[in-house]
Length: 91
Image 1 (cartoon, one colour):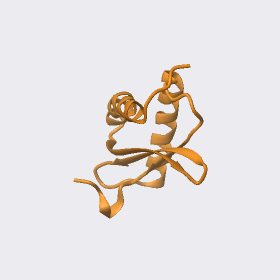
Image 2: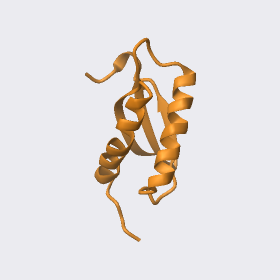
Image 3: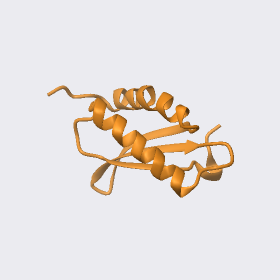
Image 4: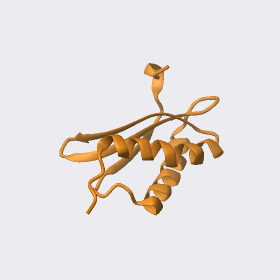
């Protein structure tokens, strides 16, 4: 088993998901990989022209989940969350 660092996971997530999300009209704003409430969480923040809806989050989650499952570089179990960056969006 190869242990992959958190920094490496974040780098790979950006590398693998950003182009896929862009093809669907989404901008990947931020990626977090945290240990929260007893579990690992991979959190993606997306945006698009006109704002992000719940349907956008669901579509991006399905796309990201399929890509991550195919690439399979995160060995530990995690939950995937996709949301809008909201008003506190990083610039």
